[in-house]
Length: 313
Image 1 (cartoon, one colour):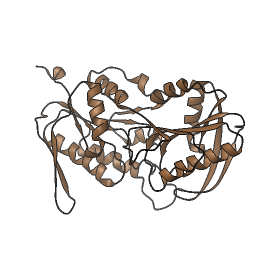
Image 2 (cartoon, one colour; image 1 turned 90 degrees about the horizontal axis):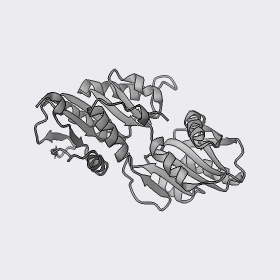
Image 3 (spheres, one colour; image 1 turned 30 degrees about the vertical axis):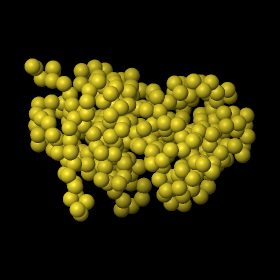
Image 4 (cartoon, one colour; image 1 turned 60 degrees about the horizontal axis):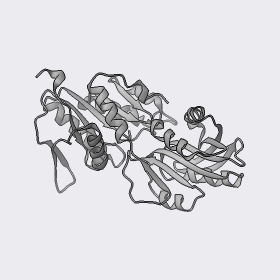
């Protein structure tokens, strides 16, 4: 059997098991056998329980904190390299630590750049990810990066709602490009929130640029962490006369008081993907799976087919 005929193998990191199973089902393959041994001090060791010599493998796992998720991905990549895998593709639905993509003040790290180099050094030959916090993070890598957009998942859902007087909103200035792309696809207006932070996850002031009176508003962002920005923006828009406010956020980090913030806000619905497993269920949160998107792209990568339609907004 020639190398091009060797079937790829799919493996997963422990915290991404449910999504990985869904990807494998859509891909039409079983997840590979891997066990993880744990030491009493917290150290762990993943082990492939089948041969991967000369094969293309996909390792599926988001790298959201804690750092164990990133460490598990790195150990699995290293183990695959030492087991003579031919191609090692890290499928990272949520690329964690991406908010540190530049020096915004003296004497701080550029963590996204550092992690890119670590993934390469560990042995990854390709990265597949979705909705990076900043597009330029692709340039931190010297290996191919397939940057997918969750808009291919969200847009059909938004269109199915048939919302009248739809307006797309960005919760901050940095997300304006994403908001304009959605607005163009949906032929709607755009409004922008201008915010000032006292410190990380703490907003000191927010203003609205644009008119939302009588509008059904959809906030668009790449992630939702404490939900402080989203809920403050939603409440402000309802005060300014919006009929309803929804939010679509690709990555549901949902840390701290996020669930309470969402429950107590004027948000009608928060729509997310399953790039990160939810800590608990919530009646306001709707999850759309990204499994089919990743499975399709993984097939195309393996067959050397174009994937351009999957990462154009």
